[in-house]
Image 1 (tube, rainbow, N blue to C red):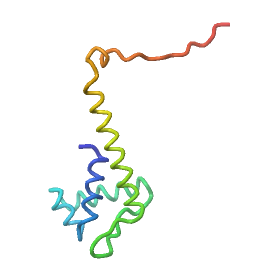
Image 2 (cartoon, helix red, strand yellow; image 1 turned 180 degrees about the horizontal axis):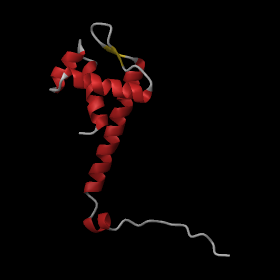
Image 3 (cartoon, rainbow, N blue to C red; image 1 turned 45 degrees about the vertical axis):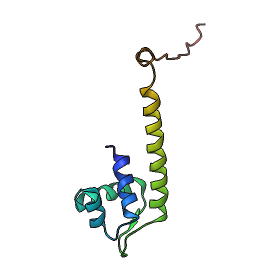
Image 4 (spheres, rainbow, N blue to C red; image 1 turned 90 degrees about the horizontal axis):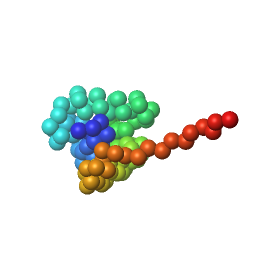
Length: 105
């Protein structure tokens, strides 16, 4: 499972959970792991994704926005994977590359 899929699942679960422990239990992972993933994403994007000081926990506007974008990214990746899977084998093995040769003067 990719990092974006894991983060997406955590944020999606957080929409319906009271605590990060409940999120972890729902996903069958540890609460420290959920916290670690969230903190890494928050550092990477310089935002707070979940309001942890309220019960139930809540996604921030940034958390909701990121979740929607991650879901689109995952859907696009799944579409690409499905399309690639059905390409004939001989096309997969020989993808044409274009190059532009500089003019010789």
